[in-house]
Each structure stands twice: as structure tokens, then as C-alpha cells.
Length: 318
Image (cartoon, rainbow, N blue to C red; front, side, top):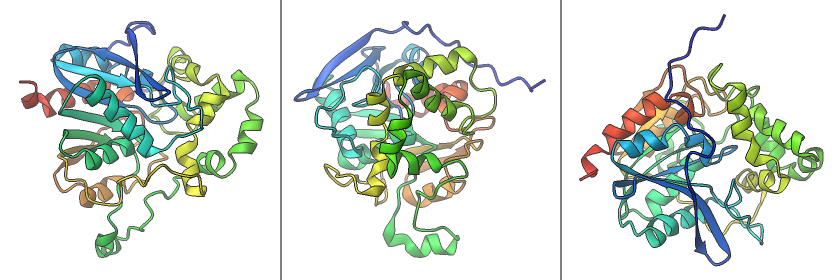
């Protein structure tokens, strides 16, 4: 018998939250959850292969704690629009989200929470819109690289490549370099869903037994359409020459106050992630290790993230 996992907040029903829509640039509308209106704004940003559903256990607790919780689907994901011109990259994700929270919802200042691709988007937002981001929580993703600190990395035996693949990171090559061949293989909705399910189950991203059968179905359902699944591969294609709208601001120190969390059961994010964050975030708290947790920290240890976020941003609620 497996050891019981730490109890987690109750997972709301799939239709528990109203889905809103807003145009953030011409021809591009994002879908988002918007709860706790009037509190301090927190933008929760998913990664891949996730949608806004990965935050389902966080939305109500944070809204009840006095936060205005804004949870979008990135362009091409979930209920948001696909790009008619196949335009997807970290800078576009970042500018879309700033348009949503600043231009549409009218917030001058806000906090950010995210991991995986969402974590990379947060770093770009924090550097690109420095005067608007108060602080952020950052977990299980690619740490920013600071080229001028090459000696610091060398002294600690760290390479200058923060994208080095973990033991199950072959998907980055398949979705990046070989995406056309992979697309041809995933020729039914069932095969698309199975590809995504493997990330939650067999690829060892998550801590064991973090997801039950109903959870798998909830997470993978938005990826039944190959167009939406393939849209999420765009960041992995940047390593292989995919055109970018701009250079993401991830090659510098991020001065925004940042709480670094790390789920150590993640077998995809390199184990040196916490160490790399020490040089990348001068105004950091942590890195703090969250036990019995892997890549999907906001779901696997919602009990920890919800309370940590509640306190980390608490002085900003007034």
C-alpha cells in the first residue's frame, strides 16, 4: 500500500468557476477565471502541458484570503484563442498577460505566481514591466541565466546551459525538433490525450499518487484537439530555429522580490534549479524545498502554496 499523501484542499467541480473572455490584442482573446474581485490582484500562470485547470485547488482559497485571483489560459491553450498566424512565444505570452491584467482589468500593480513555461513568462513580465510587478512566486521551471556571472557558475560546477534535459526530457526534442513527425503520430483525440497524460503519470514529473483517475481526465481533456496540443509545443521549437517576436528577458538578474519554491520529486527540471536561482534572483526568499512534491506544485501541494502565497503577499492586500 502506498503511504498516504498529505491531504489537499477539495478540488472544485469542473464548472465551479465562470470563464471570462477578453481581447488582449487584435484578433486574440484570452479566457480566464476572475474571482475575489476587489482584493490584491494575483496572476496565476500555467505552463505546459497545463491549462488554467492546474490552479483549480488554489483559486477559491486565495480569493477567500482576500486576493483578486486572475487565472488565464495562455494563447493557444484551453479556452483561449488559437493564433491565426501560428504566433506563439514567451514574449507574446508575456505581453498578452500584461494587456489582460493592466489594460483590460485596470491593475497598475500586481503579484505573479507560476512554474514551468508560466515561470519563464513571469520572469519576462517582471523584467519587462518592472514598475508594475510587486513580487512573485517562482517554481520548477528553467532558471534565468546570467551570462556576466560565468565565473560563479563555473565555481559551482554548473554549465551555462540551464536547458539541459533531465532523464525524461526527450519530449523537448520530439516537440521541438521533430514536431511534424510527432503531430502525425497523434492522429486521434485519444492519442493526443494519452501524450499529455504521460506527463502527469509516466514521465515522473509529479510526486507519486498526486493524481487520481478523475484528475488525469480533467487535466488532459483540453488537449484532445491536435491544434491546441501542437500550439503548446512552440516554446520547445525556439531551440530549433522557430522565429520569435522578440527576445525574452531571461538573460539577466531579476530584481523583483521573488519567493523560490522547489518540488524535488520532479524528474524533468534539473536538480540544480535551486542553486541557479541563487544568482538569478538577488532579492529572493529561499529556495525552499516542498517535500512530497514534483513539477505540478500548485496542485500536488496546494496546501503549501496557498498558505505561502497568502502570507507572502499579505502586506499588499491593503
